[in-house]
Amino acid sequence: MDVSNKTVLLVGATGGIGAAIAKQLDQRNAYVLLVGRSEQALHALGASLQHQHSLIQADINSVEGRQQIVEQCQRQAIDIYINAAGVMDFQLFSQQDSDRLQQMINTNLLSPMLLCQLLLPLLTQKSSAAIVNIGSTFGSIGHPGFAVYCASKFGLRGFTEALQRELASTGVQVLYLAPRATRTDLNSSAVNQLNEALGNSSDSPEHVALAVISALKGNRRQQFMGWPEKLFVRLNGLCPNLVHGALVKKLPIIFRYANKNSE
Ligand SMILES: NC(=O)c1ccc[n+]([C@@H]2O[C@H](COP(=O)([O-])OP(=O)(O)OC[C@H]3O[C@@H](n4cnc5c(N)ncnc54)[C@H](OP(=O)(O)O)[C@@H]3O)[C@@H](O)[C@H]2O)c1
Image (cartoon, rainbow, N blue to C red):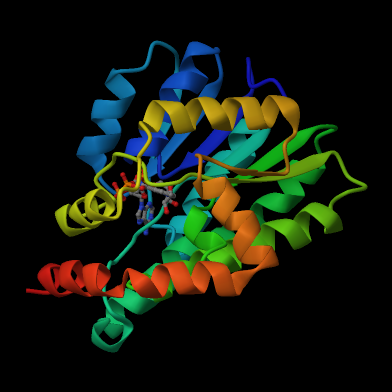
């Protein structure tokens, strides 16, 4: 789907990746409904756009927040829903705070599904519409130190794949884009240090935003970003023992930075 002149709901618009997607959509004359919890961040983002847009200050984890988003989408008749909201904790599971555990599952998985269910009647009445879920490499590779985040992103990938198939006879395309490490505030300094120590490369949010635009254009149902990350995703599916062995060897480094993160 070409995003030009489309009406797009962008959840997580104030984030690093979300803001970069908002700018790409704006450059293509799309009308964007920007969703985030911070009024200040929404206004700052809105001021950086050239075209008309709407700001929706809402928490997707609340019933009222989701209802507010849906009511606005009914008024604007959206064509595309992009879910770029997310939270992440780098923590050994034994030390994971239970409130943060629930927040990760809610924000990254449960609330996007509940919101998607409310939006479906609007999207299916269009001859052509799209849903894009931003996943992660960690939605295909269980990585020590990120057990709950991985669980949420594995869930989001499974949800997206099932929905793709369930909606195959409708005009709604359902896409899953999995970035690798991306330079945004999602990553704490311990995560950035871990990535450096492990030799993991990272992408700019602009690179991810362009991938979203081209995934929509090419109707790419599932896309993994970065090399060698996309190879590891395939390898983990085919020979998980190989990836298991490689990651277990890195445990001392992972433990060092996880402990630093919880100091
Ligand atoms: N950065 C990476 O390394 C990386 C790698 C792979 C995948 N991803 C995924 O890419 C997506 C975007 O991440 P990012 O790097 O842009 O993160 P980010 O900069 O931390 O932005 C997160 C966004 O989510 C929004 N958000 C969080 N909780 C929310 C809630 N309850 N209700 C509404 N909005 C909420 C935040 O808005 P407010 O805080 O203003 O509400 C913000 O707009 C996430 O799904 C993330 O898992 C990121």
